Every structure is written in structure tokens, then in C-alpha cells.
Image (cartoon, rainbow, N blue to C red; front, side, top):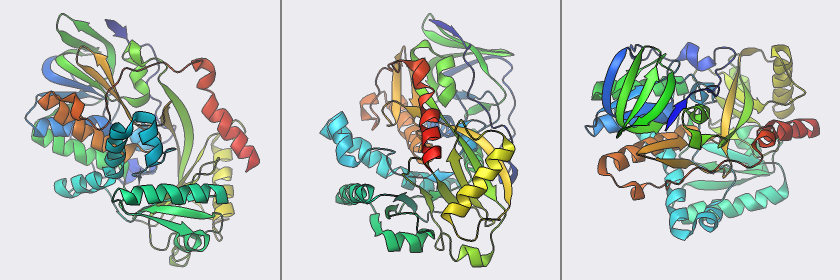
Length: 432
């Protein structure tokens, strides 16, 4: 098998994110030059790739990672930095129905515990990433969704997780808006600076012996004899095993990954630091939230008191001026007092969505694997997948993975399907 990377790489933000300007410097890394041999080659320097590299190196494995741009320059650095140990669409019982009871329970416990693993990793390596484990809220807009949410929260609590249900009044007190009928609060969730986080993971990985290279796009990847060969502009990597962790760039690296993910384009923004008076009204006890409204909305603070939020792109809002106007409209609609707040930084990003809306690890054959686990929940879940996949590669026991590997299957009617997320968000925008 040989594949030349003709598909576009994961798009970079159109302007620098807040995180790039506020994160501490990462380790000094260089592009790959010349020929390199390794046991495990990882393609992709976001959270999934760097977490896998770190834990392989800590286990004594020979591992080399290449990143096409800078560390975290894809979905990691474009994100809002929310740490959300929850499913996007499913409740725990529904996961069991979809995957079977045993597999569903394993995946539920894996997702529910992913935030704690993330924050424990930050503490263990002393990563300076403005991390705060002050809860993740999932507010809803209709009584029927509130009822379904209470059922889901009961299912999480039955499995031992700190998930509380808040009514409309409690939600207004904790979030600072009357826009919602209720919410769930995942006590182990929170937020962080994702660029600082991935740089900290990379520093720990390099200290453990991982070889990390930036500005090294893979131009062709093929299996020759009994080894993988990745050709870059200035070198070649030969590896016994491969992990693809390039998220939206995975389809350009292996033909089995074609038509496997859909893009949900988003606009992220940060306000100027809010006054202490406003902060006593909006998320007064901290925390982060992503609502379950059709036209998704999210909010959290950073350490300087900026409110970071996001909304999905639509066909009717385009260009920086329109994005800023929509950001102000959404803030003013949700929070009293923010109608005239200044937008300090605005950037664009992509959340990649699987057809299943569940984290996936794909077995591509010949000891090659692909991580596809964003779905708007990538920070903690990709961290945890990196931990487990590294252990599985070291022990050879892939059956121990909570995200059970399977073969990828293309999304049907892909040309139309890839337009669907933005089309749905356009309809949601019009109804909003």
C-alpha cells in the first residue's frame, strides 16, 4: 500500500488563537531531516498524538512523532479548551445498547473518567496551562431535554460519577442566564489552555526520550516489506508500527480513512477581561459549559478574566466583521451586561465529527492505527486514548482498550454529508 497525501491537511486557524499568545513556550523542536528508524511513528502533534508519544516513551518504547505545522496547530489549538467528560449525544445506557453491555460500560467509564486522568497528568508533570477543575455544565433549552438530562445524570451517578442535575433556577444562579430550563454538572470537568497543555505534554515526552519534529508534513506513507515508510520533504522515517493522530488530516494519510469524518466549522472568540461586577453574575463559581441547543453556545473564563465562547459557522454569517457582530449578538442574548463588551481575539476552527458521535480507534492493518475522537470532546478523551493506546502497543493487548478498535467505514453519500453540519447550523442560526 502506498498513499500520497493529496487530501488537504487539517485546516489551520485563519488568525492566531488566544492560546497561542498566552501559552508558555514549548520545547525547542526542529523539522525532521535525513533518515530515521523507530518502533512507533506517530503522525500528528495534537493532544492525541503527543499523549500517545509521552506514554510510549515513559514505557521505554522507541517513538518518533512528526507534526505538519506547530504543536497543536490543528483542532487542539483551535478549540475552546473545555474538559468535558461526557458523550456528545448518548447517555450511558444508550451506549450500552449501541455497543453491547460490556463494551458500553467500558467506554462509559473511560469517558466519565477521562477528565480526571487529564488533570492528574497535568499535576504529575507540573504543566502550566491555566487548568481549572471547576466543573463542566451541559445546559438545555426545553423541558423534554431537561427530563432526558435528568435520566442521563442518574445513569452517570449509578456508575459512581459526580454528575448533578440543576433545575432552571439553579442553572441561572450557576451560569448567569435565564436562557436554560436546566443543566447537568460534571464535577470532574473544567477547562485549560490547550496550546499550553500540549506543549507541556510535549516537554514531558521529550524528557522521557520521545523524538518530536514540527514543520514536518508527511508527503507519502506506505508499507514496504515489513515496515512503514513515511516520506517528508527532507527525510524518511521507517517504522514497525504507525499511529495516525492527525484528526481531519487522517484521510490524506491512509485510503481506509477516506470519507470517515465530517467537519463542524466553528468560530471561537475571547472578550476583553470582564469587570469583577460582571464576573459575580456570569459563571460566578467558575466552570465551563457547552449547551445542547441546536445552535450551539459555550462559555468559560481564562485566568485573566476573559470570557471565551464559540458558535458554529453558518452560510449566513461570513467574514471577520460578521463574526464579531454575531459574537456580540450571542453574548448579549445570553448574558445581561455583555451587549457592548469588546471582543479581544477571534479565531476559526473545526471540530471533526464521526458518524457514530463516539470516540474511535481504527485498526488499519499491518500494525497501523488511527485515532478519531474529537466530536467536540477531544481534550480529555484524546488524552486518555493516548494513555491506553500506548499501553496496548507496549503489551500487544489491543483488547484492553476501552475504545475497541474496528475497521473504518466510509460515510455514505459523503459529498452531501460533509455539507450537512454547516447546513444544519444554518437552519439553527435562522431559528435563533
